[in-house]
Image 1 (cartoon, one colour):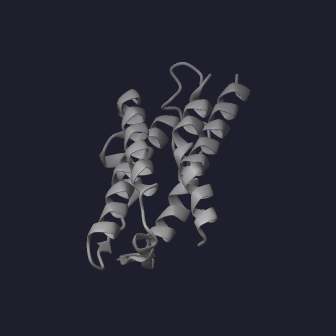
Image 2: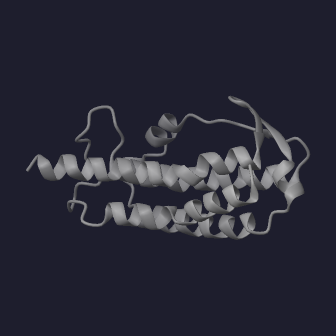
Length: 160
């Protein structure tokens, strides 16, 4: 990946929390835990997922930079959503955590050297894992979930 491509993805990554906040604006009151789309997470579940995922992904990046050939473990996001009771918890602290961890990680990304970007780890589910791999995934992650929140909002508003 070129330096310019990385910079573009870092900027996209940095804008993720604002994208999620925009998607949540105007969400129907009291409907954050609703499941208007069968088999899909609620808005509350998405927000808690983003918070937990951001914490995990931030640790993944730090391990890639600070450890020699780290193993990056996958996890079952649906188990997290269910067992950590995503739909039963207030989202404000999760949103704050998501925003804060992403801000601190963005600061780190902007300091990485070419050598840092070349460091390698191994993901337990997908194999070779680098900071470039990481950035490609997480630059889009929040934007994809913001789109899901917008679809949920549209389904709820259209159902009335």
